[in-house]
Amino acid sequence: MSTETELLDFFKALAEPKRLKIAGILAQGPCAVEELASLLELSEPTVSHHLAVLGRAGLVSARAEGHYSIYELRKDRLESLAERLLAKETLPAVAHDVDMQAYDRAVMRNFSGADGKLKALPAQRKKFEVILRHAATLFKPGKRYPEKEVNKILAALHEDTASLRRGLIEIQLMQRANGEYWLVS
Amino acid sequence: MSTETELLDFFKALAEPKRLKIAGILAQGPCAVEELASLLELSEPTVSHHLAVLGRAGLVSARAEGHYSIYELRKDRLESLAERLLAKETLPAVAHDVDMQAYDRAVMRNFSGADGKLKALPAQRKKFEVILRHAATLFKPGKRYPEKEVNKILAALHEDTASLRRGLIEIQLMQRANGEYWLVS
DNA sequence: AATATAATTAGATATATATCTAATTAATTA
DNA sequence: TAATTAATTAGATATATATCTAATTATATT
Image 1 (cartoon, rainbow over the protein chains, first blue to last red):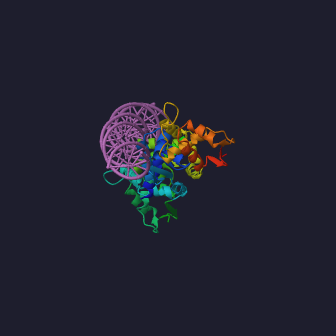
Image 2 (image 1 turned 90 degrees about the vertical axis):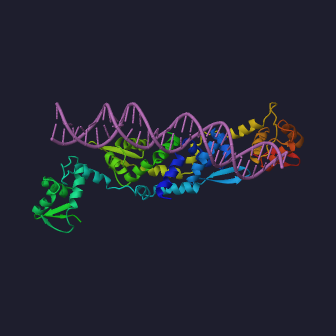
Image 3 (image 1 turned 90 degrees about the horizontal axis):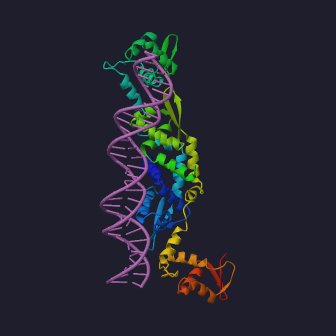
């Protein structure tokens, strides 16, 4: 099971008032379904349902005793989940399948005209930087470009090559010296 | 805010797939609403809604930047909640308002007849013990009772005083020596 | 063997909420 | 000042699920 569904099952299990209360009761000791139903003023099927959800998250386990099912809280599981929440790599892993370039592509799409050139340079800084990141990909790493050539390449995006050039320097995607420009490595 | 509602808000906040994913994205760095909407393929109002839920749980905070709202994950808050989950007193506190005697009372009610005496002694051990706990309250702490008096007192509950007496000794609510009985203190 | 009891499963219903569109607010740029 | 843009709020709808009753299963007692 992926970290994502595991965490989701865990949070879902405890995100319901009655289930959280069941966990609170079981934290004080094992308990039968009938007893939980009585303590929570719920029907037994409802308690059974909640215990199944908690069980799927690994938070409780049952043992048969006579015709009782005695449920107990899996404190070890609770601890291991809480500790994973404290680990800094856990949450980012949840977003592993998110395409972090989707926003950039959407911005590029919005500002691109039919001819492949930009209809305009975005006024919003955030979006202008998306354009700049794209512009940077038009240059080869390591290679040095005279200003004239930089302009020629940037003109494929938009006639305002000066703004693009300045932006690339500002957010340190490129460097310049002696009239030459190159990508920051 | 009580521990209970605080934990509930926390779990609810992260118990929804898209919100968990938002947390995963924000764990990698601050982000504007628009950008999140694009990354998650959701409308902006929907993202706004999710961020409000996360915000109410204290898990994200926003700062205005131009007309962007830049949201960031409150890692400190996440850590403090995870740590509380590890503390052994936290979960029991969630059930502080549960009347732990409710089950016992329900059992007593079920087995009591109109005359105040028990209709029968429960066959189920679990319930028999409820009766025994009640029976123990009929005796005064510290006082020593000869067997005859014990029987007289227990007879108010049920004629099978021998079973009651034996049960009280078995689960160590009472002790006996030299034909006298007394409550274990 | 027959009856009683605790739990679970199945099926129905009501409530909570995730999501959208439209309208509004707040901030920026022309 | 007018127009644009990001965010939020309001209102509507669809989906998920908490809860119940009834039926079924499994175990224990008579």
